[in-house]
Image 1: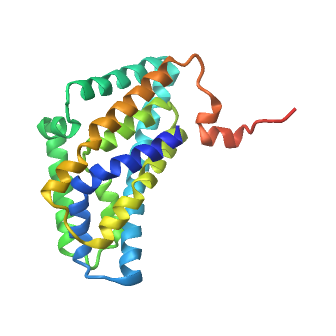
Image 2: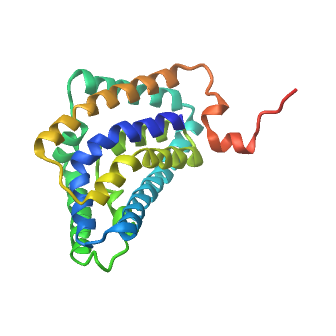
Length: 232
């Protein structure tokens, strides 16, 4: 499952470059850093994003554990997967749904305002703080990852899924953060073409996982650490 998380982050990072990349470039660009300082700031920013994702994973891990207790985790996994496949079939962009949802739109405005205030004095604010706040910005790709985290039905597994998802976005976002260059509108449109494919892959896997008769312990890295496989 963590391979799925890294793959989701890596493939979806092209979408991140088009959506969140300009924000990262703008914030870190104000620091006017180069060399090792630029690398350190870019690393801190992306570590902060991943920490933000892990907090989200913690919250949904709590929900997932309650779902598992109720014995409906497989139904939830299949349901979420079918929704994603439907999004792909109907060419529905989750980001458009987010922008049209009053509560999410209001939350996005509040987080964006907080980021804007920090950006104005970003030369004095640690990059990791900017990254943590950015991690809570409503984003369709992050919510796809949340669906995977929720399907694990336990806190550590969900946090681990979101951590590996964040790590998967590192290569593209590190490059974007350090370049301090904006992506053209044409390139952003091209990058977003990967989004439906990522949605289909994630949806298909959730359906497959939900239909499995048993959830293999190997899919949960943290549980496997506590219960290692014994050789006979």
